[in-house]
Amino acid sequence: MPKFYITTPIYYVNDKPHIGHAYTTIAADVIARWHRLRGDDVFFLTGTDEHGEKIMKAATAAGKSPQEFVDGLAVVYKDAWKKLNISYDYFVRTSDPNHERLVKLFVDKLYKSGDLYKGIYEGWYCVSDETFFTQLQLRDGKCPECGKEVKLIKEEDYFFKLSKYQQRLLDFYKENPDFLSPKFRADEIKNRVKAGLKDLSITRSAVKWGVEFPPDKSYTIYVWVDALLNYVTALDWPDGKRFGEFWPADVHVMAKEINWFHSVIWPALLFCAGMEPPKKIFAHGWWTVDGKKMSKSVGNVVDPIDMSRKYSTDAFRYFLLREMPFGDDGDFSEKALVTRLNTELASDLGNLFNRVFTLAEKFDGKIEGRVELEMQLDIEGITKSMDNIELFNALAKIFEYVAAANKYVNDTRPWALKDEQLGNALYNLLEACRVLSIVLYPFMPETSEKVAKQLGTKVGTLEECKFRKFSAKVSKGELLFKKVDAG
Image 1: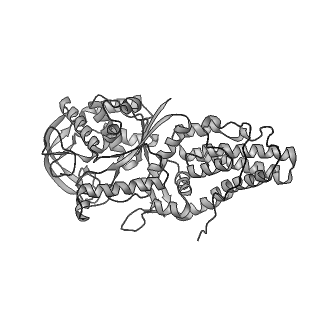
Image 2: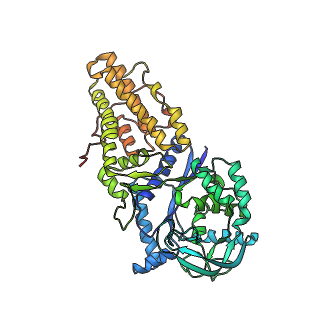
C-alpha cells in the first residue's frame, strides 16, 4: 500500500483558531481524504506550537502557568478540528515529553556535527512572530509581517551554520523542481537564498518556557527549531516504525508567511542531520475579509466555528476551496458564501439529488439500462488536479459533472417517462449520484455520507467511480442544503 504523509504547520496557541488556521487544515484534510480514497496508507499530522516568549507572556496575563495555559488552548484546537470534520491521524504538541526528548536528541546531533557555534547576536525581534528581522526588513520601524513593535536584542547565542548550506539548497531546488510550490512562489525563495544566507541563532537565554538546549542548559532552543522538528518527532524519529514508513513527508501545507522557515531553514537542518528533506512545500495565500486585512483591532476576524454552525460545516469547507485557487490570495465575504450556498450547493447539487431520489423512491420497476452519463465524468482530470494540489480546479471539474447530470435530467424529463425508459434514466442518474458521493467526499464528507446512505450504500473508493449494476433501495432523505436569506 503506497504511503502518504501530509502535515499542517503546528499552530501557535496564543489564541483560538481563525479562518487562516481553518483554511490550511481543511485543505490538508481534503488532500488526506483524497489519498485514502485512492487506497493510500495516509498519515495526517497537525498539532500545536506551545513554547516561546509570546506564550509565556499570554499565560502570565491570564494568571496561569504556561503549561496550564497551553493545555487549555490545545483542547480548543482539537474541538475546532472535530467540528470542522478534520480527519487527522495524530495531534502533536511541543510540550509533549516525547517531543521535547527527541528535539534535544536532534539538536545534540546538530551540535556534534560541528555546525553549531557560539557568537553574539544583535537584531530586531518580533515577539508576536517569534522572528528576527534586519533593519532593512522593517516597515516604518515595525515588524514587516504583523506590523507590531519590535525590540532590539543583543545577546550571546548558539548559531547554526545556515550559510554553509546555501549552494546545497540551490542545487536541491534545481534537482527537485516540485519542492517549492506553487511554482509562482519559487523565485522569491531562490532569489533570497542566492542573495546570501546568514547563520541562524537557534538558542535563547531570556526565554525559559522552551526546550532545554542540551550542550548548555542555560539556554532554551529557539521556538522555530523546536516547532519544525514536530514533523519527525511525531513519527518517533529516529527509530520509530512510523518514521521508517512515512519519512520524507509528501507535502507540508502552510500559509505563505512561514514559507521561508519550511523551504530554507528546515531542509538545511535536515541536511546537517543527514536526513532527506520533505518532497514538497506548499505555501498558500492569505484571506482578507471584505477587502480588508483581517485584524483583531478592526474586529473582522472570521471565526470558522461560527461560520460552520451558521451555514453547515460542509458549506463552509466548500466555500473556502471553491472561492479561489488554492495558493492564491482571496477575500472572504459572508455574502459570497451565501451566494455559493444558495446556487451551487442548494440549486445545483442539492436539487439534483432531491429530484433523483424523489423519482427513484416512487419507482417500483427495474433500475437498469445502458450507460449514458458516465463518460461526462472527467475522473482523470480530477485526479490530475488533486495530485497537483489544484483543489479549486478539481472542484470545478466535479461541478461540471453536476451540471452534466442536471442537463441530463432536463433533457430526458424522467418525470414524464415510464417503465424501461424511466428505469434507464434513473439508472444513469443514481449511478451519477453515487459517483458524486465519492469524488465530493474529501471536500464535503458529511454530505457524501448522507447521499451514500440515501442510496443504500457506503462512500466508495476511486476505483468504484465506474458505473456498475444498481441494486440498492433508495430512500429520500431531508434536503442536503437549504437556501438561506442573503440578507
